[in-house]
Amino acid sequence: MEHKKIPQKIFSFFPLQLDHPELDESPLLDDKGIRIYQSLVGACQWVIQLGRFDIAVHVMSLSSFRAAPREGHLKRMKKIYGYIMKYKHGIIRYNTDMPDLSDLPVHDHDWSNTPYAGSTEELPGNIPEPRGKAVRITTYADANLYHNVLNGKAVTAVLHFLNKTPIDWFSKKQNTVETATFGSEASAARTAIEQMKSIKMLLLYLGVPIHGPSVLFGDNKTCVDGLSLPPSRLHKRHLMLSYHYVREAMATGEYVYAYIKGSDNPADILSKHWGHPEAWPLLRPIMFQHTGR
View 1 (cartoon, rainbow, N blue to C red):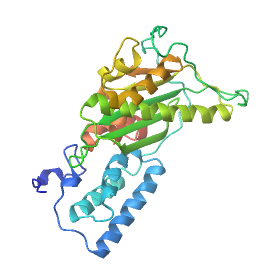
View 2: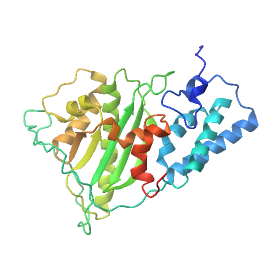
View 3: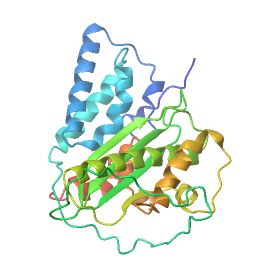
View 4: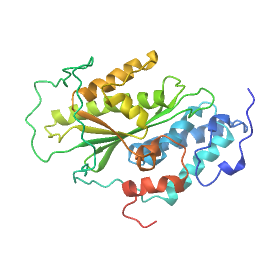
């Protein structure tokens, strides 16, 4: 399969959103180069686990080529290391302050005439009595449609906060190919809700009090309204499971799905091959608030 040559301008300081490493046609690496490439990818995966989620989507994309990497893939990995070296002071600081969600619209939706009437969140009966300072789970989700132009798969990106501290992140290609943004965003919302429930259950077993409903933010208003408003309907059968899963969670009242502008959604950091100028306004308040760089 022939592909257009990649413009050299995409090999700037850091991969841009238009970069598609799956289209790279540079020469394959030799055995030594493959070992170097695999080592670089493996080390970056540990770096991500230690808190540098700002490189997660790039490493996720490039890790797909560990078996047969090309020279262009190695160049991209070196640029990631250059970025880490230049911005080596990125850290996650614990901030236990409760997030200010006073601007969050409060809607008391009536689910009584829907299949989700009477939905409640089932909790185990052996959880300990909650003690200490309450926390709130706030999650940001995003999807990048057609992230991989060869197989058409989108990327799911999820960033979880406890109060004002990021505690978990997720960036992965979706298992199915979606033909519209709604489908990819609905799949991302389902993944986010699944992870939020898991985090909530862990906190309950640890005896941590949960404040208010857990809030999921998404930057696709059509998807947010379709999954959170009782009157909405879905006619795409292959999305039904994600659709019903999220809507049932909304009907319990324990979760809220709210719209946020894409420019304010930090999950963008985990979903797109971003350039530094584009991501810096989102990244700095989370990871570089202590530096003026």
